[in-house]
Length: 579
Image (cartoon, rainbow, N blue to C red; front, side, top):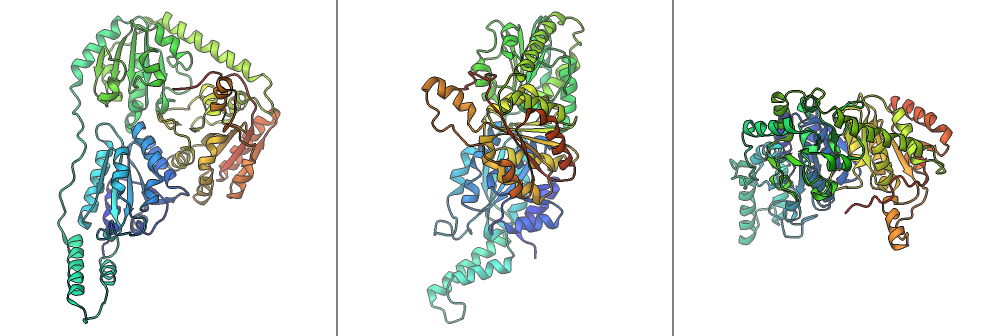
């Protein structure tokens, strides 16, 4: 007989879903078994939040909403941080959550809580299904809502009695009604009739009315906005563009966005998921001294970038600069600073349309390009000199430059950490579009395991480098077990300085106390071996290239690898506190 799990699996197949990330539970078992029967790969993780992180990364890398399924109660609540991270990063995903049986809610059933009230503030849409026939259409609608307007996570609650075989569900309800024989009292008979009627409705109803869904504002015609933007660009002498994640979330269109940015030809900074959009050696990309460029610019284009703490709440932009801001979110469009030209539209598509109408700049901005490039080259030279300084056991910059030399041209980099990861962001180059994954604006530690598994699954032909701080590694190192079981040859590099250095830097200076920031130089390579992976210790600067080469060799054989790099302290990121 067809089960509720079949309805859900059919809907997922319709939308081309290839993976479901999950941690098993009796509430959701039919979803997993029936999806597997249809060829969807089930990736079982060790922590529910990592299932949602993996679904988030899948969406970013493919443009199709990622899917996670977790059991009821604590299974659902364990996902909250990952859901909020996805909402703030505007990643489209669908979380399928188990739930107590429809007739047993509020009666003390196993893992029964009011999940909808817990989840609603952290997702774009939350819906609880009441009838079996609604499961498929609701999941289809969830896939659409996740992508429409401002992308984001959607939660679909699936009560256990909608998912299993009808005969089995009827047996459950009969057993819960008391006596099964004909010698029943009138109340017992009435209860059995009532429960039977309830099951009839669950399995036979045509479907109920869908609850209200989020209303996304329609995008305005781009023509008039493009015309105004074109005039502003033609008058500009010192333009700067910043491209953010929202401009590249449609993975299928990322090459067109890349071509548009290159044609517009102004000094360009890339943020979060847009890192790598212009490859490693673009003549217009700038990586350092962004604040200087923004202060000196007379025109700033923000493509999917809000004026939040990363732009000093708008203060990073010079007061006389004109600002063109394109964003799907009206709230973000006007956050902290009113743009000269607000464009409430998809920023990637706006850039594509703008590039169609704007004449390439030629040498018009050559002096400005030279000025911004000179600052970049000076900073690169400064970093190279700092990497030569003694910072035993290993200078973290030296380790990062070793990674840069070792990574393949198609490598995907996953960033999960504070101080060490930020150093890597300044010293390594994202290899191409959608080849860099970081948590986004929420700054969430712990994304590494989930993000890396998704990258390895979505791009099995590419190297996946997981860059860990030793503090952040503690959140998801358990997923090395998942990497081993599913054959995912991730290469992880832990910058191990035995501290939460991102916090300790300023805490010790301001408060004269390192309380809560001290860790141990844990033998993380042995932890990886315990999970069945390969582990390598790196504590000799003369062996950086050798150890990375060995890690690449092991990964090519299909084994996940963890490199425990013992790093020292430098002043490279002194005074880097964010508020």
